[in-house]
Length: 180
Image 1: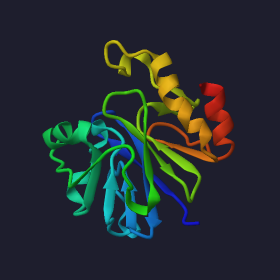
Image 2: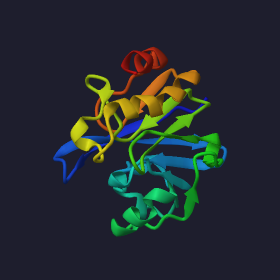
Image 3: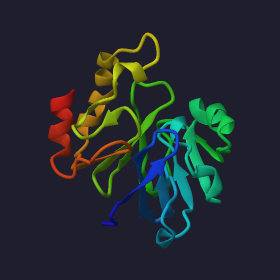
Image 4: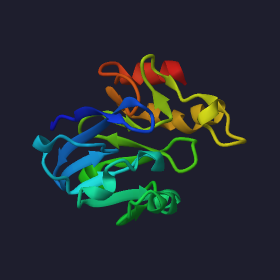
């Protein structure tokens, strides 16, 4: 099972470190929400974006950029051209699957081979929690997030990697179940 590589880099706007991820797949190296990837990782074949706020370095890597239709315009406004628009049921590189989050335009990625979730903003770490109400669109409540995320409990989740905060490296399913 190929390992997920996690790295952090300082986000100029936030003034804090944020996490990015890489995983080798049969379809080539996949970066998720990359910001300033270390050179030793190599060049990705694909970039997956969880939410348009995480455009980060996606447009400068020379890779195919994958995002749901709801993000295309917002990513273009951030200088990122989406080459592959997908729907939630579409097959993504390396067998990765996208899941709804309850936040407009945001998806989580399920990496079945690693039994891991990759989350952008809907889930945060240190401690593990839902994003704050202030990050939600008007009319969206945290209960809406919980309802949208419950189908994830059908997955054999071992790890949860987060864009903000420490990952859950063991007992991911139980941690998510307790949160929801």
